[in-house]
Image: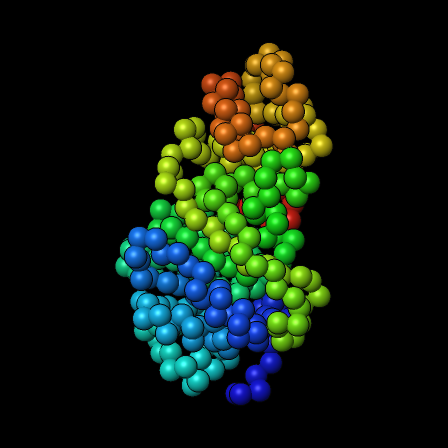
Length: 277
């Protein structure tokens, strides 16, 4: 069990840099003093042990049975503190009996965007996330408008969370080393959780807009509206990467009364690359 190897099927790259692990564990602000912390994908527990030291109400969710057994044998984690389940199948409202909790982890890169979207669905429970991502994905999540990687996940995340880059991590900090650069970001929930528009329609509009990101909004929004005259406003001359979260809120409010709800469903604008919510 001590020589357990990473599995490609789980996207595992074990963090072996103790200094980085310690720094990540200390990166949660927990500004409201909350003690409930959920680690996603603890692997062999290099981050886990630093979290446990903080005296938190700690739980981990792990989909690999070998890792669950390893953590039990080496860190003494039992079924009260480790959940043997795919995080994407976890009922967030049952983890800490409906109480708020913080998310942290060296996330499997093959599902990292889905982890973020899972958090967004339970945003009222999660005031903060600190996570290790492939740097390309980390950049996308926190990218500002006008950036070439600004997209669906940027807008939908930043609608409710502010993001910041905490550190970049080289491949040599992992075993096996990934073929990409990594980065740790922190997402802190905004105090105001009210978007000021129909949230479901907002998501639909963002997805449709970035589904054809090189086209102006006037062209991409035609599939949604019954009255195309509303699209003649110069505002719709813009391409999606030029729009801030508040601009998308404005678009949502402008178009809502003109929406053709037979065509205006979320499946029409499903973007590529796993950007789903």
